[in-house]
Image (cartoon, rainbow over all chains, first blue to last red; front, side, top):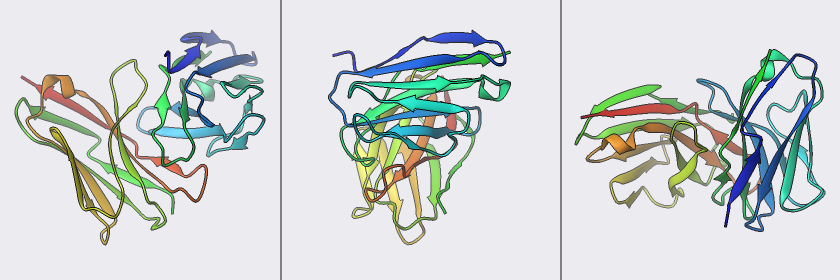
Length: 113
Length: 113
């Protein structure tokens, strides 16, 4: 049982480049989330999904897109990376409700130059 | 108001001492209050959680105290150990809204020998 995995672990982009972060969970969870973590700001929700084929915006969605084509996968895309998107990105999943335990992946450290 | 305030930002405690981290919220609809622990380079992991129908919950050396009328809750770590050195996030959520998982900004705890 791998839990929540994220690919890649590290990435450096130039301004304007695009990339996709992959999150996978093997716990059959319905809910999946993408957060970004910046110093002194805690975890801020980017987008989330309450089930396969559904996505919704969180607190800071601008500049990001997501897709949940399969229940176990949640993809986060950056269409045109900006230095302000330099951050550590965490994926999480929970069984059903937001009041269920969230299981986090190990994170992706992204630097945009 | 969706904000969760957390203090202190950083905390240094001697081994064997008590670590106390405080959080406050505004939204009375919140009905689930978890604490997450994050070690450097890792994703957050659920440490302990409480619901507003109880005033205290204890798990080993970790205790959550909850004051519903004051809209405050706190984490106490008894007999703090160097292995407890991590960043601690309080959070609040409600079952009635999917994306209402609000994290505090985090407290960096260092336990020195």
